[in-house]
Image 1 (cartoon, rainbow over the protein chains, first blue to last red):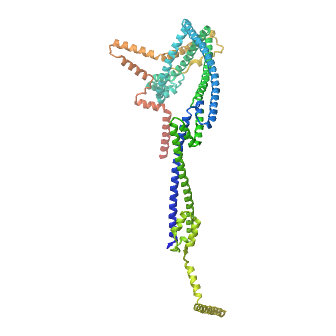
Image 2: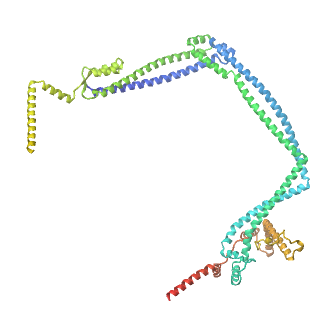
Image 3: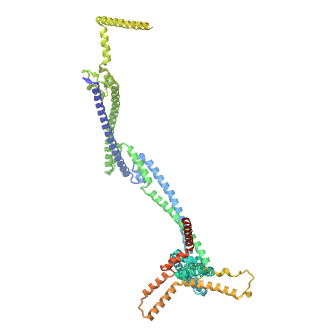
Length: 476
Length: 132
């Protein structure tokens, strides 16, 4: 005999099996999808190869060799290509003219510039010769050079003396005896001590050799400042000399016309740079247009690719029998092979699609069964079926019912109705006791016994109440 | 360079009433003294700027002197000696330690020393008065 929990356990096992089957169906479906995708890809390659075979280039002759239904469309594409070539060609011619004009202008500007550069070099040499023979200029140049050398040496020496002072002065500043005499202004007209102090100060000055120390101290304190002042003065002098040299040079350049020529040279250089930039810009655009035109003229260009795409789509939509018929008419074997390959691929795709549909349907059924089985299990768990009191008779053929469910002969609701119908639920303990009391009351002997017991109980209660009342009255 | 203070401020004002004709000999000497000081400073600065020339001249003199005295001193040794001399020139030389030096330090701090002695004397006097 099958109990309720055992039934639920079997239902759960069955649900697990259906889920497993659904998962297998999904895996198979994915596999079919991948295979179909690969075949479609292969068919695409074969179709493209066939399209290229019938249309090796975009020309009137090639179009004539294709199918009649697509020829109008391909001819329209060819005409569009020709129009585009004409438009770009005109643009190229225009740019070519512009480029030649810009090049001519640049060449003439370059000639002028080269001449001015040569004149400039000649005039510069003249100015140099002139200045070389100018005694005053040579004198001032030599003086400036010497001043520059001297200034460099002076700068180094000034740096040295500053470093020397920085390193040696702290010792003087830290000596209390020396600083005392310095503050007293010893040895200067401002020193105003007399008598013993003067005598002792003299003794101290001799003791520390103040005269020598003061001389060195003054040297270290004042010399760097004096040298700095002198260095700055010499710097100014040098700057003045440099100005004189530059002025002399400028004067000579102006007199001989070099300044004017330099300005002219700069103007021409700027003009040449501008023209070069303009020529370069035109050349860049021209190159781009030429490349574009080359691509357009090419039989393998964008227009050819568009024509090929369109032709391939046409071949894809054309019946294989038509393609076979056409292939048989040609001498080459290539198209025969390609068409037979396409035919075989189409057959494979059809077969796979059929299998795919079947698996898909099976998966849908299994998913529906999963839902139904989940519904039945849920119901069983919510009712007495999940308790041990629920059993099923030996006559209930569970396997047959389950088989019917699997074959979709009954759905979830049908299965649940069958379970409800076949379940035997044992009564609870309280229900059993109540039934026993009811059964006892139905017997005449039992009823007389029950009435006697009730009568005795009533008498006992009444006498107890009377005793209570008499005791209360006695107390009062 | 003995005196760092400039004597220029002692000169009479250029906008004053004195004229060259009415200048005394003393005033003219003072102006000459200022001019001399300027020249000396300029010479000193020039000398310092041309220190390498001075060193070269000293080197030459030392070489000649060594030849005269017959001492075999190499040019490298002379160069090292000159470098040493210029490195130590104007370096502070502290006085040698002696008792006199301690006295010298006490002397320059005489105000402080006398103050301490005075305080000690007052303290001692007060103690003497109290203990009598």
